[in-house]
Image (cartoon, rainbow, N blue to C red; front, top):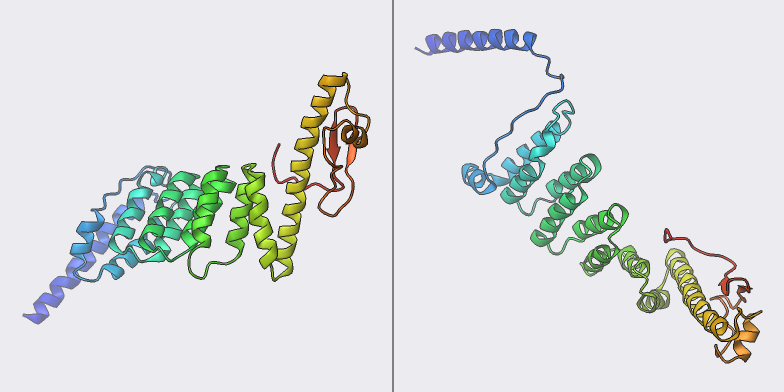
Length: 279
């Protein structure tokens, strides 16, 4: 009986191999085409894993990496959010699918909002892990120019256990990018007071220098316009603006250097300027 079963299995294997070979010889697997993917819900697969949910998630993640490496499948991104939601539903504490999935969504599909949704899910499922909020903040800042969202995400990331100090600095920079100069000043002053490395000190110094310059420039432009409205021209220098009572003192940059005043347009220029903002 065992011999007959063995012979039967060998014949079956040979037949399957033959038909697979015939099929493969007629199909160009790398021709661009659409595909169809049907994966049950994470809840269903978790039940079907019979207690091996981590193994199931591992296998699906490996398959997904291979699937998204198949660039000839023209519609492969149609299923991406579902696939990685399924994997992360099966194993919510499994970090890699959130990161790998968000990379594919952001770097290949260029759907940064989708990547952020997946990363936010990771943050909810693993609230002590800062990496998800950091990655989401980066996409919000660099790719969406959403400084408000990035600031909130950097703040949340910076408050997680073992979060690097870089995140607090990134958060403060986002506040600056929103033109909330007073609040940004207070955040960077706090960073400066607690700075222990050259990187921290330089970052704080540069931001405080730029913030003071922007605040001084804004005020000088405003007061110079008031002067012009009264006298029909811009003041010849900052001393004239001071003597006319429009400013209480002649401002200096964060190093104590005098600004260069332009009497043509009533504005000032610092010795150096950090062009972090596009405009």
